[in-house]
Length: 137
Image (cartoon, rainbow, N blue to C red; front, side):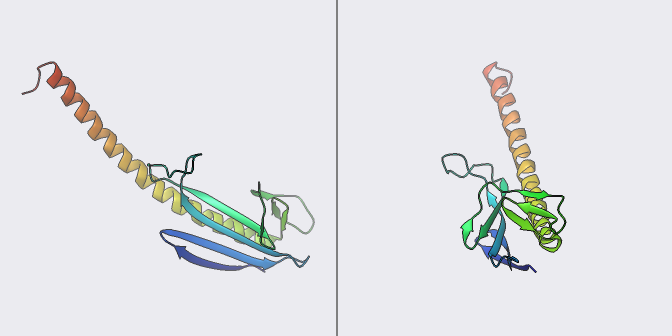
């Protein structure tokens, strides 16, 4: 059975799911929306966010995982090497969907802002060209 907890770190909301697997391993998922970074580790200037999902087994990060439904008699899905019961799969999927919805709303606001900036840039460029050709006073 997973236990969900939501915390705020700065502007980011982090949803944490914890449970103990039938094998006795402590499983933790941290799901958050974070600002996008380039390959050099610099925050992108667009302000857009991306989803970050970190899963750990006994504190060790499980790399290369993604939520995947599987055909198995007792498991509904997996994330990397972590097998997920129906209850835990649904909890992780629900948390991911909630964060993705927040990201979509945030990024739509960024897109609208960028469109306004592009319109101002286009108007400025039109004015500049007109002035260059003596068409504006």
